[in-house]
Amino acid sequence: MADHGDKFLVHWLDQSRAHRIVFMLELLGLDYDVEVYLRHHDTWRGPSELFQVHPSGKAPILEVFFADGRPSLKLAESGLIMQYLLKNYDPHNILNPTTEVDKLRVDYYLHYSEGTFQHILLTMLINSVAKSIAPIGFKSLAKMVTKGLNNGYYIHEWKLNMEFLERQLDNEHTGYFVGNKLTAADVMLTFPVYENIFDNENGIREVTGEKIDLFKTYPHLAAWSDRIAKHPIYIKVTDMMDDKVNEFISQSQQVGKKRH
Image (cartoon, rainbow, N blue to C red; front, top):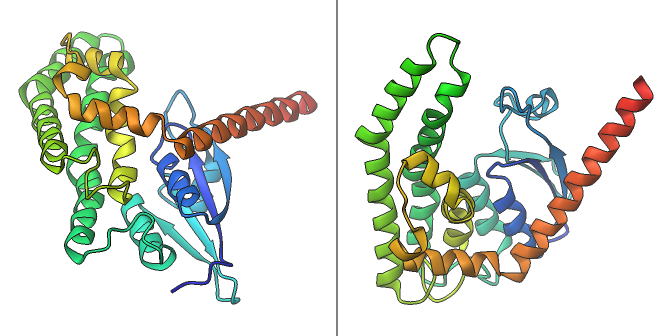
């Protein structure tokens, strides 16, 4: 088991998967700091500084600084980061289940979130904005093609996954995805289910083109999302990151004024 004197640095990008890593570190009571990066709104990519941290320019990236003097470790990919933290920094099973069967089920959701569900959401989003970024003269064609892709495949797949997750919660009868407490499975799904969908209901309606009432159609997922939104640690982390982003913007503006 790793030393709890170890420290962590999260490289955090706005509107990215990084928020749930901060949530997990806070839940585990670990000593961490956060480096803030903001997207370029014209390209929606991270800034050049984030590419210096990792060649993908993606977030989250977690750096681990060991108390015993070992060389630091840099981890990418949310699922790997969470598995590493569960294995090395959760001796009291705060986010780990206690049985091997349930631990395997948590591992499933860590892979399912990124391997099956997230890319469907991302593709739906890209297709929905294709018209606005297409060259003049091709906007109507881009809208026709991408709308056809969404209606012909991705929206159907999204609904299948929503129904699957709704049944999983219904079958569990606890309000959580694995067992009777919050686990890393719930933390992992905060981004695709709560942040991307239930905290973005109007956006989902725009993407799907349907007047869907998410809260009536998927009541178990809606109740789970409400539980996440009201979790005191999640609220604490969200407020903290809002403050850090505002501070980052303020400092950047001050630097910009000095340069001019």
